[in-house]
Length: 314
Ligand SMILES: [Mn+2]
Image 1 (tube, rainbow, N blue to C red):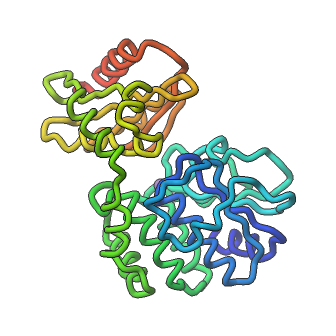
Image 2 (image 1 turned 180 degrees about the vertical axis):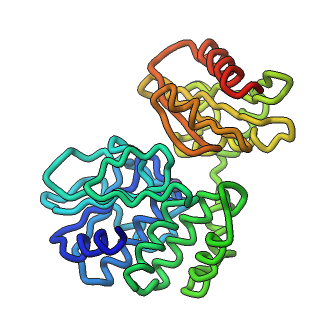
C-alpha cells in the first residue's frame, strides 16, 4: 500500500495536502513532512487547512508559512493526514484521488487509498513508514516535522502505545536533523497567557464524581471570554484533570461559539472511544471526543457520567 500511494503522488499533476480543522502537531507535522518530501521530488503541492488562525506554537515547522486557507482551482490528488472522517478535511467531494493517511481506530476509510495503521501512536509514524518503504531521503525539514508529529501525539512520550518502534523512528529522525530539545521548547514552553488563565479556570471549577474517579469541567463562552482563551487554547487542556491519582476518566464539555458543545474524553487506560462512538464521535482508546447540539450542559454531563458508569463499571 505504501508503494501505490507514493506512485500516485509522484504521477499527480497538483497535490493538495490537507491537515484537519483545529490542527495539532501530528496533522501539521505529517502533512508538512510530506510537503517537504514532495517539493524535493519536484512536485506541485499546496497545503490546505480550513482553520484561519493556526496555532502559533507550530510556526517553527518548515513550510508552516506556506499553509493556505483556500483550495487551488484544480488538483487531481488529495492527501489527508490524521483525519478520521472526511468532514474533518472541510473540502468538497470531487473527481480527485484521495489518499487517507491516519492512525485513528475510528477511521472511516473514506479514501480511494487508505493508509490507516491504528497501532501507531501518530499519523507521523505512518508517513515515516511511507517514506522509508519508498526509499525517500528524510531531509532535515522532514525530520523536524515528523519528530514534532510523533512527540506531540504522545504528549512528548507520556502516553499512547509507545514502544521500541516509536523510539527507533525518533532516533532516526534525530539522526536526520531533528533537535529534541529545541522542538520540545518550541511546542511546550510557549503557552499563551490566555491558556494559563484557562488552566486556572479549570482547576478551580472541576467537579469529581464516583468517589473521585471521574473528573468533569464545563467551559462556557463566558469562561472563554473571561480568560481570553481561544478555541486553540482549549485543545488537550483537559489532560490536566487526568493527571490526578484517583481519576480514571476526565471529561470536558466546551460550549462552541456557534452553539452546541464539543465533548472531550480522556482516560488513563479505559476505552473512552466506545463512549464517543455512542454519540457519533470518535478517537482513540484514551483520548476521544464528540459534538452535540445545544442542550443543558449539566444534564449532558450527568448523562455521560451515568453512561461511563454503566459501560465501564467505575
Ligand atoms: Mn494524530
